[in-house]
Image (cartoon, rainbow, N blue to C red; front, side, top):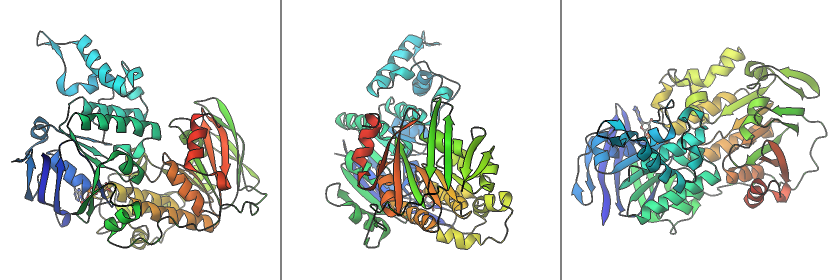
Length: 496
Ligand SMILES: Nc1ncnc2c1ncn2[C@@H]1O[C@H](COP(=O)(O)OP(=O)(O)OP(=O)(O)O)[C@@H](O)[C@H]1O
């Protein structure tokens, strides 16, 4: 039985055509990936199905009956639930209160039945191995735990059609496994899922089929086994992909490593773990930071950038006290955050202001050709003057990345910078990083995606992967040791 059918859906925002023809059918119990480049219309389709916006044209059928999704409440009543990275949690309330916000159990029809509330919440939390979060205030959870609670909140509504809009792009491997298990569970219950993600490996491991979108159109739907990654990439871009992950340099050649580190930190203190790390980074080196989520990877780069107080380090052999991010920038460091919403974009500002913020305000440099740079970084835009918020999420992140790349830093620190960026754009970002490395910059790169670290290591002439566990570096991988298998085993087995 067809659970959802969309026929020729169109939607424009002013002169921007977000959807020109979205046509797809999803079976009951099917997990369908929606794959497309940044700005291809995936979220717009999701928001139409969730009743947040109305299509200009087209028909939607639910369980083979025409249906006008006129409001979010109406879509919810039809069993369509959306979960995305845009959190709708009340941070001052408990996890269980948030989970059941849409349907708080009552005693005598008046008072909150706390016992039932806890029981219902505990059931779903246990299924997700998150029962330790019961009773906690949402503001006390890590961002990733908050995403999982947002996801649990969708599950508790027992959706018939669940739309998962890029929830996994910020999650680590073990959390993605939780999402995967729950989606399989929903599938077995007969629900259908639309799964939006830019991570190919997740799409292959979670989904039954994939609909590829390009420029607001659904191009084709295929069974997940029918096409390999390069074929999907070609369908997304409309071009033949010749060499998806180019091996620019051999990683075996470690003899080139300079004796003189560009950055040397005898003792980097990580407050959360009370551990001390020693780091030496060579000019032109790519250093990937891996590990299970929350083992200090993010703290490491943030501490280096002066975000956690003064840090003592040596740059090209000269002792420096980095007391703040501004100070770090002036010493040649740059920091790209993957937390676009809170640390990336200046929401009320234009593309041009967002792109040139550091260069103009901190480095006091003028004469920046923003338009040319936006093209160089592959941003899809109308004019540099448009507000950044009018761009799709991935395009916004490209502007944030561009902001730091144009400073031509000595050392680039990146904290999961490519999440939310489509596969093709991610490759572009990797190439931009490698160009920077070729020009002599060093890159310290945290990623929640081990495959990304392996790919980048293969593209850079000198590379290492440091695996962290409880605030310590427990394994250093180099040369042919660099593989996702070795990263996984070192992360889980404390360096083994
Ligand atoms: N409220 C809006 N106002 C103006 N333009 C919009 C609005 N919402 C979306 N768009 C535009 O519609 C197009 C499709 O955006 P959408 O967010 O659906 O893409 P997407 O495929 O989800 O992208 P991403 O992978 O980057 O999240 C983009 O060009 C975007 O700039």
